[in-house]
Length: 446
Image 1 (spheres, helix red, strand yellow):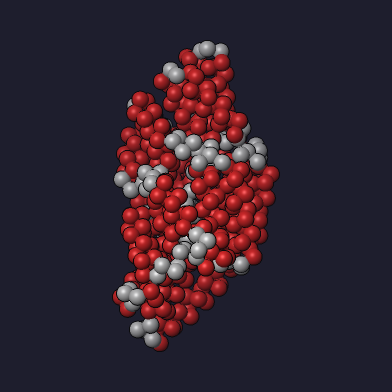
Image 2 (tube, rainbow, N blue to C red):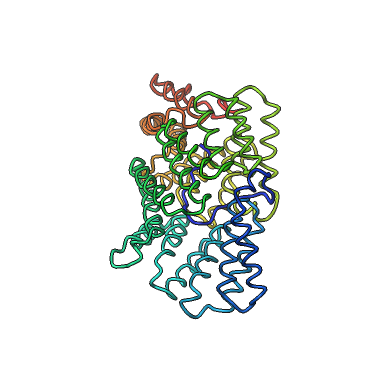
């Protein structure tokens, strides 16, 4: 699995400035909305409402295309809206939407502050609590995140009956359930969120995102059939949806259908070349014995990560894990993990830090970081694998066996290389041979 997407904010982080022609066909409604509100603000440059609507359209365009320029345009439109109205309840929507842009840019503290201001301006709108919870979660403040999510369930608020609030409530319940170790409950909540999204006719891309997330939950349990069905549903909702294509590629890879996985990853990359897709495609090429093509994809990962200042901000964790996984630039992997830790303290940043420390032979420190990564008892097979390898290296065979067994039991094909390494290491531990079990992860990697 690439790295689980925890946040369910309306903001999504994408990369490239141009999507292929087939993807543009799904964006006509958004393009029309942008043109309409551009015309409206030209007609009446003092109307704060139209600037807010224009900002929302730009955010949706950024989600659909991966062009980060649209986040910049959204911020400018929303800031203009707030210049015109920020003292009364009417200004709250623009504050909430600008908080969404900040979240997309990993400016979590600023996003949190602005979302709270939106609530202060208009307490009747409880939807910003979802964004507050998301930001708190990324900052590792989970109890505060859960408290914010509970605000979406407030039976005293009339908006609790509105489908949009119900969607936020169910999707956030799914996130909390997954993070606290109940993946089956996470699936149930996300299935309800998908149904609400479809029934209320949310934006097609948003429906597809929800279906993709459901697929991710199924994959975590090793349920490849239902994961595949959810990803296919996402493609029906939003054809050429890059996340669903990558999800199907991961299912094909787990099932041993490497040629299919290659085709699907290529399709995802042709839509938006995210570093995780290039890294995964490189791994599939390596598994199939095509080292030359694998190297091309691995080079692409580094190129994307260095492409611009925005990428260097949002892809630190992905690059850190990539370097650590492939035993290249290990000191850089640790630097990037620590840099990410400056703004993020969630369990996946702790996990990335632990893995980078482990690969830099700082195993005791890795165990300290891994304890933080595991403190919510999240059932993520890859995190459990990392924990098992760290404890194996420390000579704690009991803990190593426990975590590795749990990883394999949870999802026997959780990773193209590491699932086999987990079984090999377990065999060594069962034979009482730490020397056999202690082989470096590089033995299983390209």
